[in-house]
Length: 275
Image (cartoon, rainbow, N blue to C red):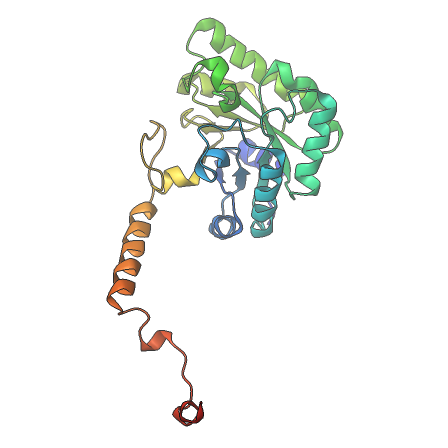
């Protein structure tokens, strides 16, 4: 059964938790889809985990369309959400609608995601009016990393916590079908979840949200270096990959790979007639 904005809403109403993971390529999307994940996010996090950038800011519309199209081909049932990259919607309503349309038409996305609260409500409303579902993103919004002065938990003061609540209500009124809450104190995220009729998807926002999202490289132990507090490693895929790569290198260097069972045969009589 194809997951849609309506089925995610039904999950919130029934209390069934929503599952979302990132994917950036066909193979990963196909595996996640076969496992039954409700939604796949083609995040602009691809800038860091796939393209090696320091942050998400250099990611282009062409990058997002390319990766979204690959994911869409692999996701038969998952609700595919594509991030709108930095400066693809902040420049105005017209740009926002055109670029959202490209992610759907060229990338095959089922919905788009953009960061921000009250300041992007006009864009959300216009995109929704163009019949494109919008997932909002509040809290730590990575495209604002320079304004925030780094990756920090958001909403810890009374003023900032109230603004997050107010922004959540405004983006819901503007027509968003769901909202990602990133790096928000768990109790605050729970209050926002209770106040909204649309689903909340948490990442570093506690178990009180209607669902969760993780970057798949994080939850499979593929990334090295600093790991955020909210990340749980569910499988050591990185370790398995390293073991496989090292074994391949060793066997190739020793000449034990390829073995006879990995090669094709030809009749010795034919070989004998070759000049």
